[in-house]
Image (cartoon, rainbow, N blue to C red; front, side, top):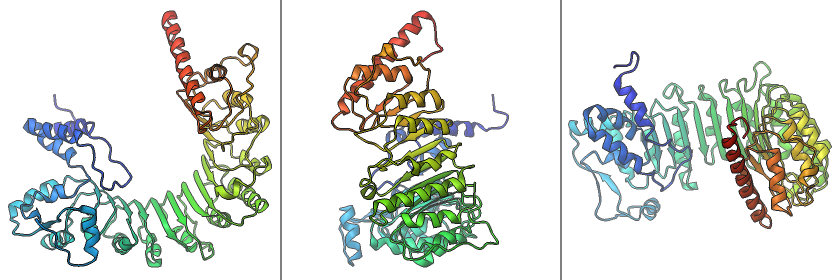
Length: 522
């Protein structure tokens, strides 16, 4: 019976989508997708007329090799020999180790019609131009009279070795990810950005990822992409003023930016307008002394997710602590009512030189009561005691994921785990170092058994003496734990055995529930 709103083709297309794995977000170089699902879709397309179009739509929806499309044209073929005309072609030949493929010969209207039929199906493309000769793209663009080769393309991930990528830019693009493989390929990225920043030509572009050294004109062109919502700029940004320039993007909700050896100052935006009015997620990688000036540009209580990787500043322990104290105070004063996720990582060289504990630096963050995710790495001075972890648990009642710095000489004991188990009921992931060597007998523990739903416990470099005692205590606190992780080479096998014992205890409980007919407790 026909669906009252969907056609049979639409329903079949949704079914076939489940046969195709999701395309990876990262750019793949010289790696092809698993062909098994494509063989299944091809068989479905050939099985009957009803399956033909919806199966082909899904089969061609995501491509990782543009030459599969070019091979539809009889004029596209592989040369029998390699001819090196200039030095720039040498890299191309070294990468392929095969004769290049060229487009040479007449192309009929029927050939173009068949080509377009498949080209219109492509929505996502992972592009590394190592097989087709660069002249293929030039000639194809000329023959198509500059019309888009992929008229329905919405997502492009590219590691361009030449200008061929420019021929694939379509007005329908929503997501573009570009990584320059080497310094020789930077100009291609610059030209691509100059094209993409034409908002009238690319009105739907919402997500842009660029990993390449950029020129000043390229950086200043980003605000022209008025519909941009997600922007990532990695490598080669040394002008801090670009942060203020980007603040004019009214719809930007997510920004990730890395500054390398900044040589300018942070300028304040125009007071007549709100900087970054829609920004919810910010990830910064910058020298520690510039963190606060950059955060001051942001409006108060709008940001929900903040990540900071602070590079080496002044190699002075007390100065580094003072910097982090001021950073934490700034974060609390500006975002205490909005922040839900905080990820902070200092320069590991400097902070490993300051092992003395200082909870006062950390304490301002306890005023962010809505925090759900908190990750702190490489802070050697975060050797918190049970009492201090108790304050953290009481402040962050909504926490779902907590990661604290690792230590092989922790001050915390089992009492810290008990505190998180009793207080943070939504916690699903906990990374903490604690001393598991002198655990009390299980009979002497007054803490009642909990039904906490913690799934992952990362014990990091926690010292341990008895696998059985550790397993019984953890099982009593967190009976739903499925993963016990450890980062210590010396005690890794012992913690691995703890994980095995927890699985056994869970299986025993399951058998008991099956016999008693009880299903409420894990």
